[in-house]
Image 1 (cartoon, rainbow, N blue to C red):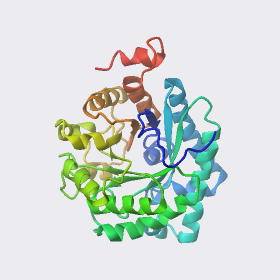
Image 2: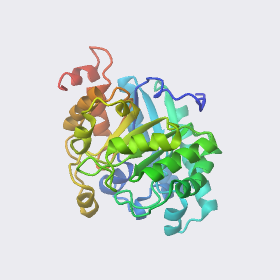
Image 3: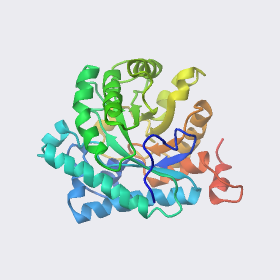
Image 4: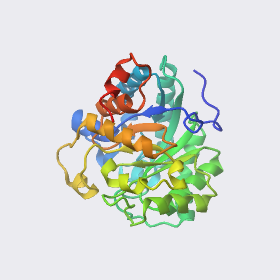
Amino acid sequence: MRALHRSSLPQVEGRDMLTDSGLETTLIFLEGLDLPCFAAYPLLASAEGRARLRAYFRRHLAIAAEHGTGFLLEAPTWRASRDWGAQLGHGPEALARFNALAIALLCDLREEAGTVSPVVISGNIGPRGDGYRPDTAMTADEAQAYHAEQIGWFAATAADMVSAFTLSTVNEGAGVIRAAAEAGLPAAVSYTVETDGRLPDGTPLADAIEQTDMMTAGAAAYFMVNCAHPDHFRTALQTGAPWLKRIGGIRANASRMSHAELDAAEALDAGNPDELGRDYAGLRRLLPGLRVFGGCCGTDHRHVDAIAGCCLAHGTGSPAARRATACP
């Protein structure tokens, strides 16, 4: 399967795309792995680790095949940047190799994806600090300089785009977008919100998206929301305002726990997959540009299947369409 031209993302052009779920929580709580710093990228160093990652992504690709939709493959590199890598004993040269290995693994998965089309490969970026707390205050210039390193590693691979997840400040989002533009890669920025629908630094979601667009001349391909339950941000979306068109993806939690509660939790709260699917159907009605559907902490392939059944049913006789009759 040919790689996509970087200037053309099918989800921006109106194609519905599934993506994966809570990779790290699946590996930790469901598969019993120890992931220091919540980092999945070290698994790329071993054949066993790479096999686990392939199995995880294949489960999700199979759902896309059933529902007849495209798929957005996110690299397992959320923690594969300089500051987090240093905590795990990895310097820049090792991190560059890990990021390249991650994209190579996704390229292999794209080649074997069969009927799933299109398949987009994204270099996944996480926050410099704790995604639940704005504890690494940076200017937009500082954020650009920090994230430019990992984005540069992705630019040297077959990645089609970069996606930054669980960001908690506008400056970091703007820095990522600027760095991606310099590297010639489309970028999606995903903010996380607290139970009040505001970013962890107190910025309302609407202000965060509008300010980021102003600081970057609207250079982001689109925005997303991740790592929060729909109940936490649904009210912020019920405005009909123009900025809602900029939200192109949702990766929500199935759990209604706050970030503080999730941080302290010793057991997985997987919520209810069918309920989450119905929540997504409601979000789709509020967000005219919503095209990317996946999950975050506590979700797995069952949640993605339920979301697809409610939002992406194709054909009245398909299993997906029959399941969709239970969705509002």
